[in-house]
Every structure is written in C-alpha cells, then in structure tokens.
Amino acid sequence: MAITFNESSVAGEPFGAGVQRQRLLTEERVAGTRILLDRLSLGANSVAAVEIGPRSLGWFQMLEGEAALTDAAGAAVALGDSHVVFLPPGFRGTLASTGGARVLFAEVPSAADLDPSLASAPPPLRVIDWKREPVLDSEYDARKRIYLVTPKLFGTSAIKGEMIIYPPGTSAANHHHEGAEHFMYMLKGHGVAHANEEPFPVRAGDLVWFADRERHFFISDGDQDMVFVEFFAPGGYKTVWAPGASVCTWIATGRDIGGRAPVREIRSHSSADQESQVDV
Image (cartoon, rainbow, N blue to C red; front, top):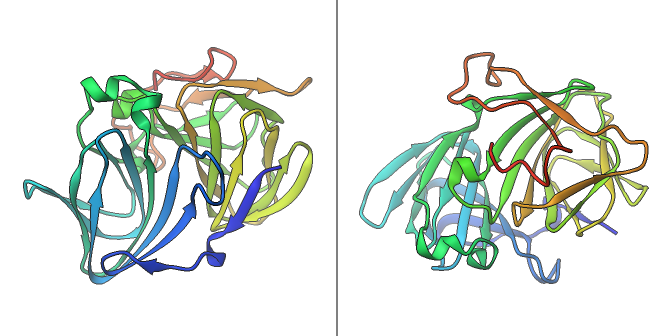
C-alpha cells in the first residue's frame, strides 16, 4: 500500500543559521528509497550549507520567497519562486535568503548507480524557470504537464520529475510503473488518490510514495486546481495502463503557463510511445 503523510506531521530540525529542515522522504520511512526529500524553511537573513556527494546529485525547487545560491568559487545566482535548480555531483555552496523562503530539496545519494555516466561526465549546475517551460495539455481533459527534471534539461537519467496540474473534476486513468520508485509532493489543492484501487484523501503538503508496480491514479475533487510534483528514480521506466484505461496522450501547446512562447519546444507524445519520455 502507498505510504502517505502530511508535512505538518514532521518536526523541523536546525539546518544552518535560521534554517529549519523537515525530513520528508527518508530510509526510515521508506526502506530502500533512492531519493531523499526535505522541505527547508529559510528565515530572514538565513544561510544553509549545500553539499552534494561525489556519487550523488541534488535538485531543488523554490516554493516561495527569494534566495541566492552561491558555489564554492563565489559565483552566485538569484532565485525566485519559479526556479528549479540541478546540483551536480560534488557541488559545494550555500543557499541564503534575506527575506525568507521555502524550498523542496531532493537528493539521490547513489545517483551514479542509476546513471553510470555521472562519474565520467557529470553535468554542470543548471537553473531553469518552470514558468517559462513548455506546457503540455492532456488529450482527454483539462490537465496540464510541465517537465522539471529530464535528461535533456539536466543531462542525467538518474531522476525524472514533472509538475502536473489537475483542474477541479479531472482525473488520470489507472496505471502503474515498472522499473522505478515513484512519489508525489502535493503543492496545492486536494483530491482523492487510489492505490491498488483503495482510495484515500490527499491535500497540499502531503507526500505520497508508490512502490514499483503499485497501481494508482488521482482525482481532483476540490474547487481549485490540485497541483503536485512527481519524481521517478531512475528516470527510465515503463508505464502500464490498467485494462480498458485510456493511454494518456499529451499535446504540445507551444506556450508556457503564462501563455507566452516557451524558452524551448517539445513534441506531443503518448505514454505508450516508449518506456519513458527521455527526449523532453
């Protein structure tokens, strides 16, 4: 059965000057997990050390506020609430905020085991603005999809991630994945999740973890969009749809979430085209 809990049930712990860390996805909660997930709360004038191991990789998404990421050489990049950051193996630096910020921080401790090319050709630090990334629309309803972590964006197949937007009343078809663990972090709204046909409620701040091959789908039942980010480790996997379910097809819109031309183009695709979409 899926493992689920809300971040409000997880106590914070000190993590630098003026920083609190909530350890959401841990090996204690999910034995054998290949992704660790934290929620960082940076207070005013706070600083947190950021260190990624030589065989690991990191990724974080700004949830609110502003911060500055500075590397070991002193180069700094300003971040706002729409930025997503990839941290390569061996990265050392700091994350600081003058006015406060909230950050969703993921680490894959043994990423080199999932993507052997990381050891010989580690990709560089990279920052993207998800609000400028291309939006894909569901062929069947009003759901939207924005890719956050892909081989094309960050140069590794160790992890894959995306943001999914479910307007009220929308849902996905029943399916499961083979070859990867899978979890969602609920950013906004609420709804009902199903794991092996068993329903349970979900709301903002929930983490929902599914085991390999566990059937699942979501329904948005509120009066606002239900929004979540989801991750897979490794990034290559197979999606299998339940008998009679509609295979999800995503249509490239040629626009970003604000209706502008996006910073790059991706093609429309069906989840049945290949084991996983590695070219996005």
